[in-house]
Length: 251
Image 1: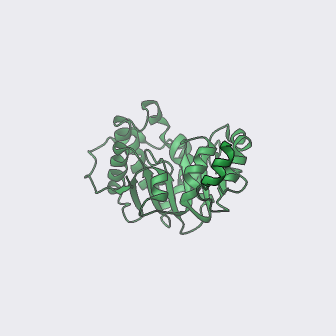
Image 2: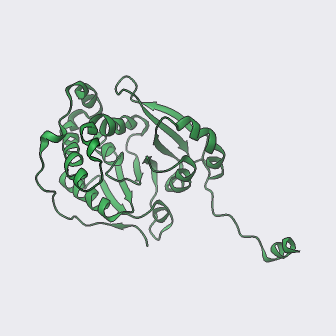
Image 3: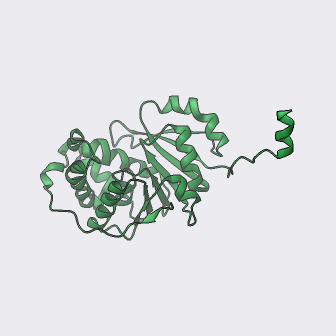
């Protein structure tokens, strides 16, 4: 089943803004990362901390950490994305990092790719509530469907956060990047180990050497850990062995 663009499902109910107030100690970092769109980021924080929790997209214990653990962590990655880029966010979930990047960088065109209906409903409602429909679209489907369906999508940058180990992530995301485009994967403390373990698999999938980057140094603490992979080659499916060779192997 190919990914489908969801229609608007109406505005979200009234929410309590006190549940997602920007902590004073993070105000300077938030201002640097979001600039004159900080109010828009605050609106998204409110949606995450309330409706996002109620609908199971954000854990209740995460609500007090919306800004440092989620919004600022994701916004720091914007420094790796070139001006005017098309961004595909795979396994977008609650919109992290795709929606954050769309808020921080109005020059970007962002597509949120997510297979679960309840999540895509939240994403579309949030896009409508924040008036981001001109820059953000929501596709319901898996990365493999988005890349190989009847109406395939491709982007300059493909992002993913806490989706899968690097080998599987490269298999899903590199086909969505244009040749020369990049996978930008937000990772945790095990990023260097993943690079060592999965670099060979990444190369087989057409990717270059995975590069470990720290984003937001001097702005967010700790900096955001990212693995960046350039799509150097287009790798097609493995050819099937001919019947003659298969018979020879059986003999």
